[in-house]
Image (cartoon, rainbow over all chains, first blue to last red):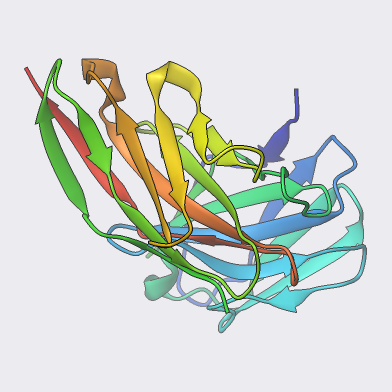
Length: 114
Length: 113
């Protein structure tokens, strides 16, 4: 089974802190994604990466950055956390997208910024 | 550009009655379409996917969806709802050209006893 593991289920951070959310996948997938999930807004794409050291902005990249130094690991960085970044963060991975490919998701990290 | 619209944010049905969750999509290319389910405090699980081999797609737990190109729709149905179906459901379009996966805003399904 594909496994996508997010390092923390719950995090509480203070405003202004630098926050790292880590995601690791064990299936040698090329693509990795970071989403945030908010009630009524669904999942919104923050950043995605289709290869090591490659990254593309999603729909809401402001206030975030990412790092992909190894194929299996994709990190989301909040340079200076703010209260409006309180949310559920979901990481996903997939092979190169074809007609039959789906994404596999981690369990999510619920981040609270106080 | 690709987009997906889930027409209802909440749907309530009685146990044993049919379920219909509506999804419309927009895509410049032949789309890949999926439905995911998220139970409370759980991750996302794939219910079914449209692969272009057949327009009627069967998924897990008795769910199915029909791809209708003329209506740009991919509605999710189940003949008889079960209490365990209470969850949030996401319609997803995959943009093959630029490798993006785009989610609808979700439909929360409530099952009434």
